[in-house]
Image (cartoon, rainbow, N blue to C red):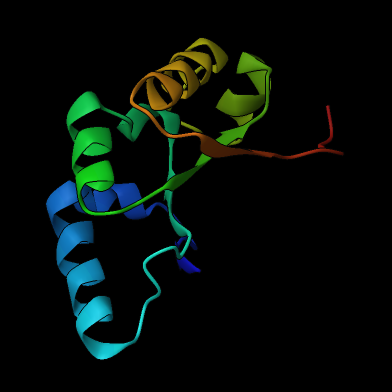
Amino acid sequence: TVYFGGGTPSFFGADGLAVILTAIRRSFDVDNGAEITAECNPDSVSDRLLHRLRAEGFNRISLGVQSDSDEMLKKLGRPHTYAQAVMAYQRIRKSGFRNVSIDLMYGLPG
């Protein structure tokens, strides 16, 4: 598994992630069937990003939805709405990613 996470790697853009993945493949023996994941925020998901990630061999997206409450998303300082998160998920699936995880926070006050 190669996992681009720990924040929002999608802000590097597809080109930046492709450069990093190429360096990883040159430095390590990455199996052809390896799971290669990019964490994405709903507001950074675009058709161009998804197309390029798939072209570079990414086969899983972890989507940072965080909450289904717009009020809570605002309190958390998240730049997206729940509707945008749903649209991002649909866009990811439509682009051909079969393996998608959703990050949700629970036990939040209020």
